[in-house]
Image (cartoon, rainbow, N blue to C red; front, top):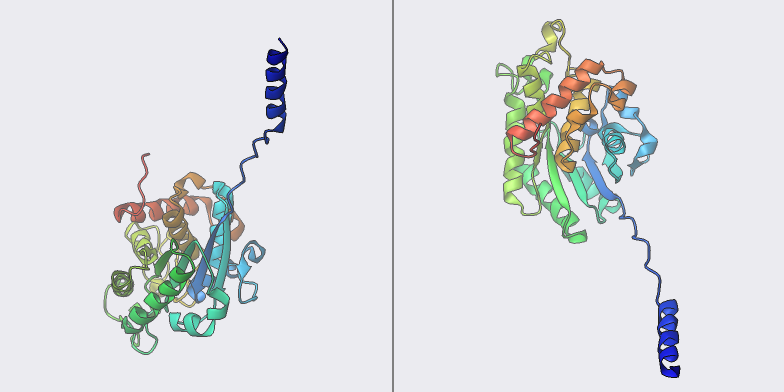
Length: 299
């Protein structure tokens, strides 16, 4: 009997000494860095100063831009992201690599890189410098984090380049410039194992025009019930153009079906985008990504 009592007491002692199970730790938010120029800043529209406090501006210039739209979408989708950007108008990837390396050379989970609108300011449409600088940046990020996803953002055709006589794509279809930019970025992607894909923003713009949601030529007046994706300079994006840009970026990176946001999506409301238009642009973004096999949803 004494031996039995001793065994029971010893068991109780072991139970009391056993450490309690720790509460599971919450995973740290994923980190994303945007590098680019005014096309990612949302210049010439309300997007430029949209919710700058929601992102880390590494240049300290109070810019919200596409990164802030990404952060707002993430909040609504219930996804944890820590969003940062290093953006400077009029710059190429060479600038970020050689002039801002001290700010961006750290570990990130995702990096979105946006090249100059015509690829090379001196030789529009020429991808030579992109093939040099995009892989170099990607290698730099990969050295900090082997699992980083590095994506290139393919931007839109500039109306001034398509419709003005001095434009490099004058006389060609309005989508020609965006397709040349896309081909240049695809070459950079193919040339580097550290680059993980291209985000088809420009082709989403083309799709919006093909679907008669957006007017393809701002120089001949705006067609009734169609939006203008360009701002007043026919170069940068309007609020609607930047909104479509951000939707494509967010959906491709997160795999989230942005159509779930619906017409009442809050960033669109805050930017003064018509609810019906917000819903249409969400549809366009997913249609383009599904066409390229970058996302897939059953609805």
